[in-house]
Image (cartoon, rainbow, N blue to C red; front, top):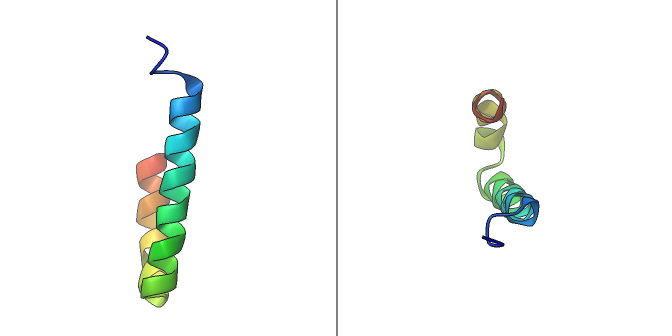
Length: 43
């Protein structure tokens, strides 16, 4: 199926990145404390 391509994962990554930026703008320092957990979940 053409739906599940590398483009899907790239677009998901971009969307996730934009969401992370939105959280950063809304929470500020709360986001900084969550970064290690976020990195650990990605790796």
